[in-house]
Amino acid sequence: MLTGTILFGVGLGVVWWPTSETIATIKAQAKILYDEANQNEADARRASQLLAVAKRIADDVRRLSGQNSQSATTAATLALLARDAAIHRIDVRSIVPVPVTSASPAPVVSTGAAAPFTGAPLEITVRGRFRDVLSFIADLPRHDVLLDVSDVDLAAIGESPSRPKLNATIHATVFRYQAVTGDM
Amino acid sequence: MRFNYLRDSAPEALEYLRLGRIPEALRTPLAALITAVLVVGAWCAIEQMLLSQARNELRAQTFRLATSKVTLAEVRLRKTRVEELLAVDSRLRDIRRSGATLAHRLADIANHVPSRAWLTSITRVKEGLEIDGQADGLDGLGQTVVDLMSSSVAKSPDLVRAEMQDRGRSRNVISFVVRVGERR
Image 1 (cartoon, chains in turn yellow, red):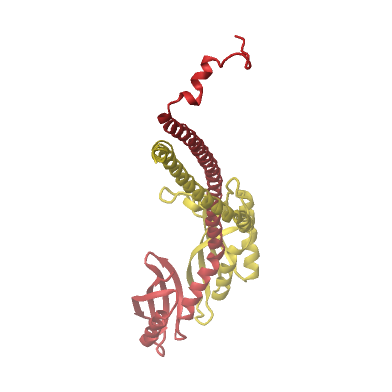
Image 2: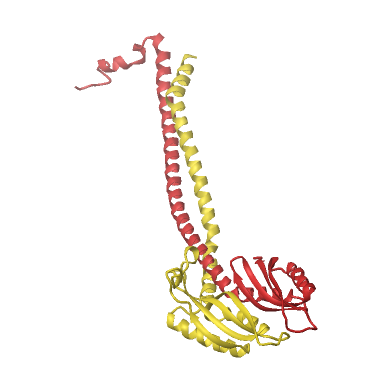
């Protein structure tokens, strides 16, 4: 009886109790780390498809971004206006880069998410029938020049109210996209 | 020291260790003590082994977590790049759609002008769009305002000015200016 008591007392008090407490604490800590690592690895596995998504978006950006050198953009813009004017039976009367003023400095450099864009505002005056002007405006940004049409002022000319010709001043911005390192 | 088992008596050192020398009353406690020491020692060794295993496990999980954190950081970086690319892609798509969007707005406004009125200009102003036109009489102008109210791109048409034209005696032509807000 005494032997059993001694065994139990010494074993419990000196060996088992403190060690088992330490083991339990360490195991609990290891379990937390295990769960966290599992979660991280699962997140990382799920994110592996990001590569495919990134490639798809980069391809799309490359396809949509058009010319990215200043002179190539100017040449492409002029060619685009000539081609679209002929297709949509429009007279292009003037192309005026909006002058640099202290109030509206140019070129426009987009900020935030659209930071890689550099834009030069442009005023294009055309003359034609309403439907032709509309199809011309709709078609302009669809080609290899990154041209953002923001708005248009329309004014009727001539005295035929049934099929009047219009003078349209199109306010646009020609953008150049400078690819950020690593996204292409 | 020479010792012959056949002839010599047992050496004195061995005599002390002989069981017969231990008093009867101490034998059981002594045996209990030795057993207790052996059992507790074994128990202690097992607990130390378990503790060591737990520590190894903790070390392994700590390493695994550190590795997974590095992987996760790389994934987060990649995710940020994808989000940036997505923002660029979205901006490019907005630019590519800008012409069609503007043309649709203008076409919608034109489609909401009744046959008894015609537009002479559409100009962007701070509050929205200013529409100049002519209408056949006051009821033609009223119909224009009513029709513009049902436009999906213009809202709250507001008459700025209406003026009778002295052009023909048979028709009461009224020139007008209506200001509309824009629905986005």
